[in-house]
Amino acid sequence: MLWIRTRRRRAANLRARAVSLAAVAATALGALTLAPQPAAAAPNYSGDPVQYWNNVLNGAIRTAGGAPGPLSRAAAMMNTAIYDAESSYQLRWHTMTSDPYLTAINYSAGWGIEGPGEEERVIGRTAYNILLKLFPDQTTYLDNKFKERFGTDPTGFDLLDFTVVGTIVKNAQDNRTADGSDDRAVYTPDTKPGAWLPTSYPDLPDPACSQGSQAATPNWGLVKPWALDSGSQFRPSTPGVYASYENLLASPAYADQVAQVRSLGAAGSTTRTTDQTAAAWFWANDANGTYKPPGQLLDITARVAKDRGLTPYQNARLFALVSVAMADAAIGEWDVKYRTPIDLWRPVSAIREGGLDPAWKPLSGTTPCFPAWASGHSAFAAAWAGIMRQYFKSDNVSFTASTDDPHSPVRTRSFTSFSQAAHEDADSRIWLGVHYPWDASDGYTLGDSIATWVFTHKMKASGS
Image (tube, rainbow, N blue to C red; front, side, top):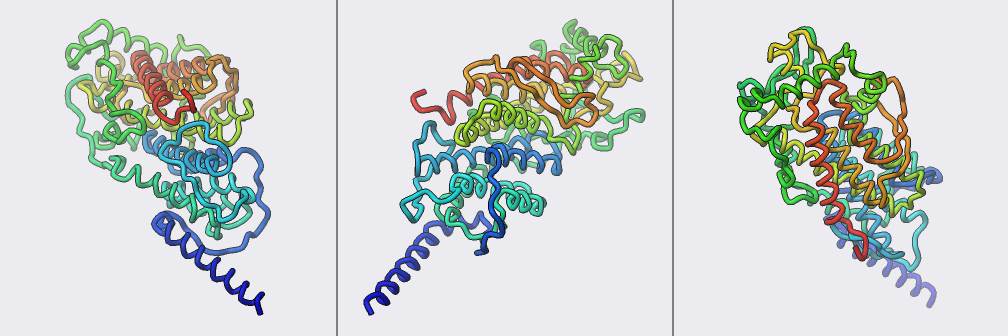
C-alpha cells in the first residue's frame, strides 16, 4: 500500500501548497475576479500583447469619452501595471534590463519551468483587471476582448493570479488611491475681460459648455504626478510674461496672437491652406466617440513599435514611458490652465467679446470647455515625441499616423520625424481656431521638459 500512502502525501502536499499560495495572495486577489472554469477554446496570440491591450484601451476610451486628463491617467495606470507584470516575468524567467515602475515580483510558479503562454497570461490578466477597475461599466466589452485573446472567460482559474497578477494589480491601485483624480469641485470663472468664459453662443450652441461650472476637470493640476515632483514643476511664465488680464489685453503681443488665430483659424479662412485644414481635423479627436489625443498618440506608438519589431518587454517599457509622460503632461498642463494668474479665454471669446467680430466662428465649430493657455494637444504631442526620440535614440524615424476624427478628410498622414508630427499637432490647434500660437509653443515646451524628466527618472535602462 506504499503507492496509496505516497499518493495521499502528494495530494496533501498539493493542498497545502494551494492553501499557502492563497494565503500569500489573499489581499491581492481582492482586486481580481476569479472562478474555476475550464478553457473554452485555443488562445489566439496573434500580434504583440502590449499593443493588443492598448488597442482594447482605445476602444474603452471611445466609449467612455470625457476630458483627456482622466483618459491619460487610465493609460498610465494600465501600462505601468503591464510593465511591472512583464518585468516580474522577466525577473522570474529571463533577465530584467530596466527598472520597474513600482516593483517587480520574483514570483514562485509552483514548478521549475515556464508555463504555456505565461508571458501572454501575465500581461493579459493584468491589463484586463486594471481595465475592469477603470471602466466597470464596460465589463461585456472587456470580457469579449479577453475571450478573443485567450479563448476562455477571464474568470477562469489561473495560478498566475495568485502568484503575481493579483499583487501587481493591487500595487497599481494602491499607488493611485487618493491621488486627487476624484476631486469634483466645480470651477467659478473670473469675470474680468480676458478670463475664460463658456463658449456656447446662439449661433454656436454647445450644451456641454454653456455654464462656467461645466469647465472640464479644473482640479486636474492638483492630481498626484506619476514622475514629476509636482504639477507645477515645469510651469511656464504667463503669456507674454503678463501677470494680469488688464496688462495682457493691452499688449501688442496679445493683439498679434488674436490676429493670427482670427485669420488662420476662422471657419471660412482664406489664409489657411488646404493641407493645414486637413491637419487641423486630423489631429483634433476632441469629440466623444474618438480615441481622444492620448489614444491617437498610443495608436501611433503601436504603429512605430510594430514597424521596428519591438518585443513585448520593449513594448511594455515604451508604452509605460509614453503613458506616464502624457499623464504628467495632463497634470502639468491643467496646472497651467487653472492654477496660474491667467485662465485665458478662448479665441472665439476674445474675438467676439473683444468686439473684433461678433459673428466669427472657429473651424472647429465648438471649442473644448476649459481655458486656452496652454494647449493640451501640444503638451501631449511634445511629451510623446520626447519619449519616442529618446527611446529610439533618434528623432528621424519615418512613420504613418492615423486618426479617429470623423471630420478629417484623410485617414492617414506620413511623417519623417517625431518632432515633425508633434509640431504639426501643436500648430493644428491654431488652424482649428481653438488656440493662440503661444498656447502651442508653451504647451510644447512643457511637454518636452516632462518627457526628458520621465525618461531620465523612471523605468531607466540598466546602466543608464
